[in-house]
Image: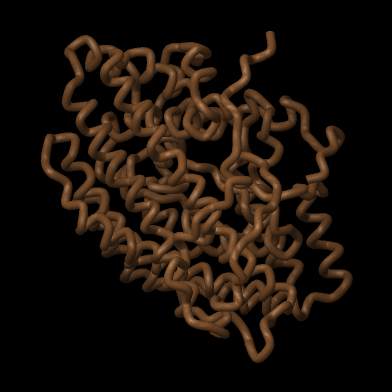
Length: 447
């Protein structure tokens, strides 16, 4: 907590500177090589909140959004929701450099599920089954917001509107994050109970697994029987919870509070642009340089006036980003008490995450408006250069339920996000249609 407070103080006083699938488009498993081991001290909350990291990430999102599609916008790793359990920090500081390899989560989760006893495992499975529909709801309720953002980008505004209603956007995301609060609170309670019940043998097993070294984790295979007995969304939730149980237990408050630069403003297709080559590509290493490199090249393609619209975001969002970090500290502190057997204040957690969601909306609404302003003034030559820089021609046929492709569902009219009608009472908590949540149990893996 001392480190987090010091970072918040340092940042506050720093100067602020300006699918149509084609196999040919998929890189081979050798397209990204394992990076050499290096010192990971550069990953910190201070670095994530720095001007340079924020600007590069915002610019990368601008590239993804302007050259992308609604389907690409919707892709999002499920681990970016309810992320107060140290997993993102664990993957970023992995000394073996496997943090962004597709096997990272699977290996740590498989170890946890292996060492849990039947009663502990049953609690985690029950939680996954109860919460899988919440993930569906969160994914679905992102769609009206992304629809409004893309309408604004393309100039398809409701009659009489001049742009997004920033207050409506912030209110919408605050409501959306009620689901994040549900996920976070109950996950902390259940995993806290499991950790409290660890035997000495379990503690010894996990004690040999380093928080920041993938190579110390035994190569335990996935439990195929367990996988076949669950729906895909349930299994994804289970593996997420198992991996985060480890990062929470072995981590720290600083790890829980940490966020990567792309944690906020997840509605613009940046995750799709970065992660697409890794989909169904076992062993693939997702580039840790792509965001920064492409973000800087995006800025170079813009003229001075356009560039200023993007660089100016950094200073405008500074107060919100600072408040987001402080709010995360308070949330993580409250949740972490569950590991010590303390009663978690549910009302406080929900109120804090509601505020956190509002902050995400304020930053995201600003991004969307600035991206649209740049898009309106691009020349044909600039557009061609941006498409070339994107270097990904694959356009999803539908949308994504996090990382699962689904047909585009009907969504509520997004006019209210332009201030053309009252904010709907159920905004951010719309019920997903059955077509969006329909899925089968996990098929047996082909041998």
